Image 1 (cartoon, rainbow, N blue to C red):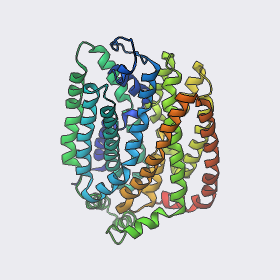
Image 2 (image 1 turned 90 degrees about the vertical axis):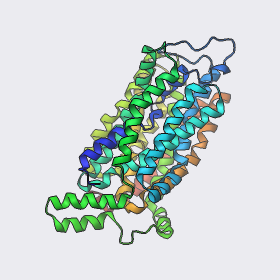
Image 3 (image 1 turned 30 degrees about the horizontal axis):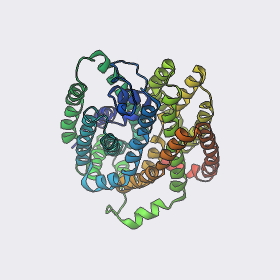
Length: 441
């Protein structure tokens, strides 16, 4: 279907904002889960959760079990990536998105209906994580529809993901103002107003065949500018000559040194940021101001995303990844402290990291990998991250059982600094060539 790339971008922006990984705003999500009474029966001799906007966990056991759910959200998100990527490459973005919306609806309904059934709550996290990939992979293809505005499109989706973390922040306030209504009724109305219209529009606007749809729209865009030569160059730039998906080519792309280095850095990044986010609500559980600031700053990370556009056009994505790696090391150091200034500083660094969480890796891959393999490559690499994220479950256990929280932050800080070394050498060896390819009009 021929659609002007900007109109498509606006719709993709809305869908990724509304049905994105809202759990990345973990402080708000933890509040929501607690307000629904998730794991409240783990606390002995306490009343039912009160209908309050600001709600602390009823006991440490509930706080720990709710806090560790972020790992399940992200493990399922990343672990399912290879299957989601290959699924999208073979059945198309439309079916992928529609199925993901259905999974997201189920995950929302399970929370208020089975709030104290551990297996069901974890299943809800898993379905939600899978649906996040099923939305993200098709949405990130927006950059292929206008090579001239490739960076702008990718950053726009990053901004929408930042806005998406306001979802539970707003939901908490709606629940507070409608505290006399049953939680399940609020969720059902929310789904009808937000998810149903997007489901209908997605069935119309998302393509069944990505390559055919992209080629149709790009050729149309270039012909409108009367640049026949540019059209031929663009087609060669976006598509490989053999458009059939081949396992040998897939493996050769995976074996590239730049892909390996950046993939390892992304694994460390996800483990590090996930543990920091899980630790924050527990560390500042008694500090309402610190939690509120964190809730607001994570969604406002879109400011950093927009600013990064100017830097990205000059230096490419690798220097930004290196910079974020160093910033995250400082973030772990700031988590040694528990005062209000330290919490604000930590939230700023966390927001900066989240603003370009996986986007810079996706930008690099989308600029260097043929379109026929983008879903599969991203899926495979992110699936590896899903396996690595099981480490976070062990870290949470050590933190709760042996009070090794500071030692864990120190270790993650050291690993972050060590990862900066191969990133730096890769930057010196590969960036000039990659930047020319990245910035090629």
